[in-house]
Length: 90
Image (cartoon, rainbow, N blue to C red; front, side, top):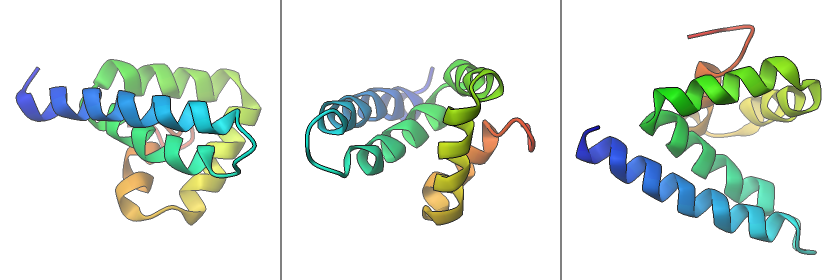
């Protein structure tokens, strides 16, 4: 794994973890923090991208939330999420 991918995985993990902590708190913006972390993890790891795609195939509510995010998020987040979209594929 190259340095760039390693940094994406580490950074994405940290951002996702912070988002997950905020997600369960009363603050309403945890999901908005999880999304960039998720995008970073997808860009950094093909195995993680495959894992997310499988979760989307098997869990309609996760897929629905990520599809909604794809409609509203900036391109830097949308492109990695599209890589995991079961209807688009990669």
